[in-house]
Length: 115
Image (cartoon, rainbow, N blue to C red; front, side, top):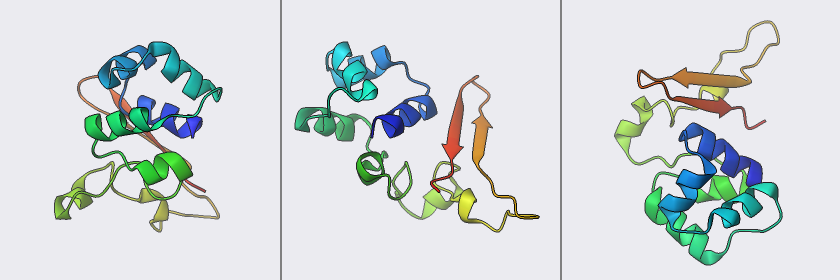
């Protein structure tokens, strides 16, 4: 789970400090979770759900599904919700491994294949 949480922080362009402050948890807690030393508690997960409602907790906890939850019909046009890895984008036995999306505000999101 710690790798997926780090992936989420990268996708959201957040530092560990910003993330801890947003969730109102100790900065050391986030560091310990990311290092694998501790597992997140109920309060941490509840705050995560409250502050990041589009985060798919099943993905975070188990690795199943997509990073972001589908929120409705409009989500199909949202790049974070598209499953580009499942498209027929293979050619000559090649598969998409990683997609990086750069935004005009100098942030970016990294999408990795779940395989």
